Image 1: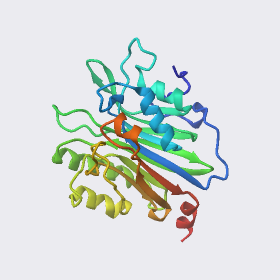
Image 2: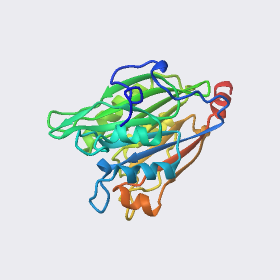
Image 3: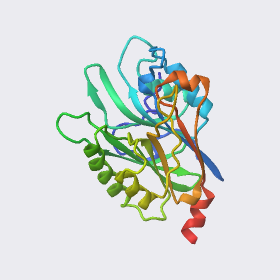
Length: 267
């Protein structure tokens, strides 16, 4: 299992708490978003190792994960966040926990970069709906500050509208020139939804290849926005035989040119 220094606590943390080395001279980075479905694949078998192998295929510097099940158990890999953190040799940042009868469940971030700060936004809506939240993390990417906001929004339209307002309000606390990535499972399958139009106005157009369901993807539930938009090099769905089996979602991978952050600030 991962050591305590690898998985960051559920409070704001300084960069010194993370073992990840700095990355001077970084030109391009990759970031992925993946709903791992509690590591349960289409064969109904729970396999954190299989999810870890998909992450290795993706080969990203940062991963936003949804539906991470951290249930204590007898198996070495029962606490999925700790297992993935150790297997990938990356620092793990848990989101607001969702307490179920079996343990903890929710969002998380894995990163190779030093962490400058961590904030957690409670996006829960209504008394009877599943609690939701967003991770809001500042990373040191080769001497450049990058803000990453990762989330998993609700299933109902009114719930998502409320959560989008909270999320975009959070984004607006940074100036437009501050490099920002917003990503996760947005659960918005209608491409002309007002929530997406509002997001595009603030963050720019998000490329959204379909990734759900994994065996025959035709819905774009997962999205990755990058601001400034000119820093976004590509967004692609990771559609391999292993990824098709590992979860009911396929992961998305974005490549970002961090040199364009500086260019945008000076334009």
